[in-house]
Length: 128
Ligand SMILES: [Zn+2]
Image 1 (tube, helix red, strand yellow):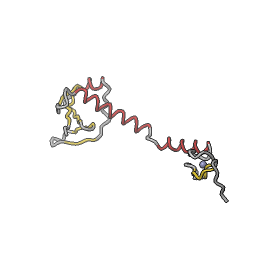
Image 2 (cartoon, protein in one colour):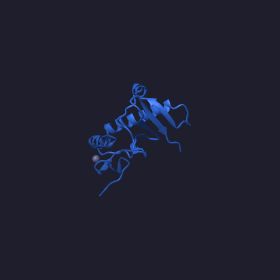
Image 3 (tube, protein in one colour):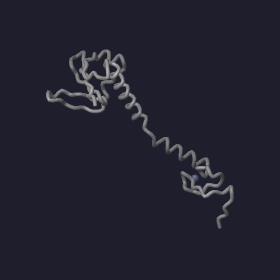
Image 4 (cartoon, helix red, strand yellow):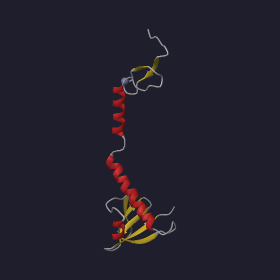
């Protein structure tokens, strides 16, 4: 028979579902279960490669955004060298599309750029 006292709660361990003895706010039956649970949680969180690429994309967007003169501007030619100097990474984009002239645009969220010449790209911004 189960004897319920102040020291004995019917809480279940988050990791093994075993009954926890002790304070009502305890989440684990043992230090071992706590460690295993937290390790599994860390492992399942966003992989480093995803974080790295997200950072590159966000940086790319902020570089374009900063080079546009105002929030109303929708088109601008930008020097590839200046973009590179600011840390723009041409390898990463959020999508691609081809216009009627079969020119390829690389999306960076609400911006898109295409090769304009050897030195320049044409950047457009989609306004909502
Ligand atoms: Zn446990």
